[in-house]
Length: 371
Ligand SMILES: NC(=O)c1ccc[n+]([C@@H]2O[C@H](COP(=O)([O-])OP(=O)(O)OC[C@H]3O[C@@H](n4cnc5c(N)ncnc54)[C@H](OP(=O)(O)O)[C@@H]3O)[C@@H](O)[C@H]2O)c1
Picture 1 (cartoon, rainbow, N blue to C red):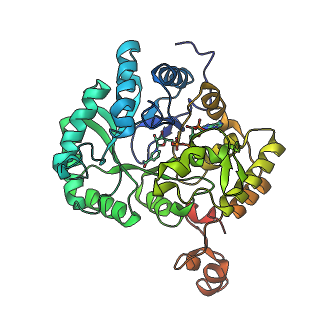
Picture 2: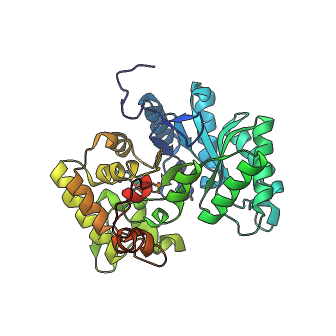
């Protein structure tokens, strides 16, 4: 491997929570590997993106059994089979999504599905172990004890190195980690959750929980599917611009309903202003903002074209000033809701609770939360 095309900031590895695993601060998301969903990259482009990411010094790749019907995993497996280097990579994949309509045990987080899903992922990835195995989303059904015992068994068998939870309630994560600590089970290394300038709700519960209980946070959709690249404009109720976001109205996915709101367009306007001041792109500024938030170890980026990836990989050296950070924080501040207002507002924290005295040591998340 040559070192000339390396990006130093990408090759400055972070620990994944309270583990010994080193990961790049930007993880390559591969939900867009494959064209099955109408917005991804074909095989050759996907392989070129992966090659460039690895060449630049990245080592952390995120996929899932459900992405593009298994094509994403297949493309990653093919790449490493052809080019080698699998052991240098930290490959993360996920289970939960049902892949066989009509079969209730071919999805969710029960033991039967976890074993079935892992065997399929290993086959498609052409590997005999997964570095980080994610529960993709809470299924609302399976007892947390069953999930944690099953995942611990897979680590002991050597099929999985570390485990993580994606898209779960904070109470569920806290219970899983507490059970792990009490019963000697595998600890939760990381949480994967949506986090960006337009989606900051995890600051209330998940980030404080992750900091308190020792897991890394790995944000997904840090550009809000591309909205924060600044390439879209409003045209009445329509969105103009080329890319995934303009397809959203036709996708019928309720997860996207919250994206094209007046509030989010205002955030984009402020982001554009700050990007112009810094002479960087809005995407780079939006990524730089997420990567520096408390608890964030590695941010999962997405790109469908080489120029997007190249620009995004250089986001880590963007320096947003304190005043610009405050403007971004203020415009994107989450709604003030009960009971968090009691923990966020100086009226309570410095007035009612401490009798006007200064708190000696605030936890890190609290200091930099959007007060
Ligand atoms: N755990 C979960 O539930 C979950 C959910 C979603 C995603 N994820 C993970 O997170 C990864 C990233 O998610 P995401 O793709 O939604 O991330 P994102 O960063 O919010 O959006 C990436 C998309 O934005 C556009 N884009 C990226 N860089 C750009 C640039 N510099 N200029 C202009 N447009 C740019 C591209 O789409 P266009 O070319 O179409 O515009 C790209 O595919 C996924 O691959 C997956 O691994 C996890």
